[in-house]
Image (cartoon, rainbow, N blue to C red):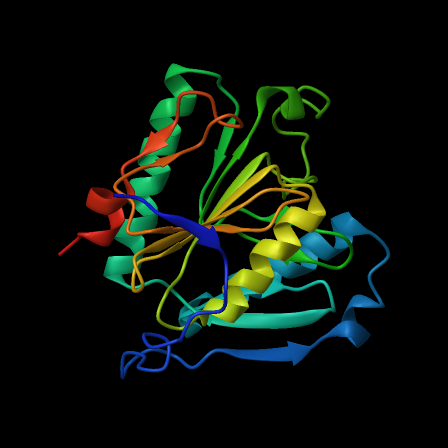
Length: 226
């Protein structure tokens, strides 16, 4: 049975016991580099070259709103399976229903300068796509807040870090956000102008009303994976 409560910081049990071969996360202040870049397109070009040049290090890279480059361990097999299941179900719902664009973990989203973030999964509504240039002429990243984003906590991320990232998504204009914690078996549901709600070991999570008709079986697709 699903219960709801206002979100509170949780003990970071899993993140304090990372896998032995997992690269340690780190962050660097790159604001002096960013100050040399004249616009968003230049930042996208630099960031994509940087990530490509360092793809063999085992990290995923983001830039936060304060101009810090954040390096997080790339997903292992379990993490890829979890995020892949969410992406597959979200993509099927989108293709069979409203359309739009589904974002993968490699997707790049432009946050307020100089932020560049990538959700584990996300959805851009059809009406958000209509003002964009035709395919092949669009910017590298999604140049606005997706309608929906989801983050799945990994062992290299603390609850507090992920909660702060979700708050950043909502402040940027995301309408619905899910923080899925497979270790505590929780889903934190975020919406603008409302306190986050924690679902304790839910069987399913509904995207209503923002994602009409989308229900994700989080227990079987993420929590109970072996």
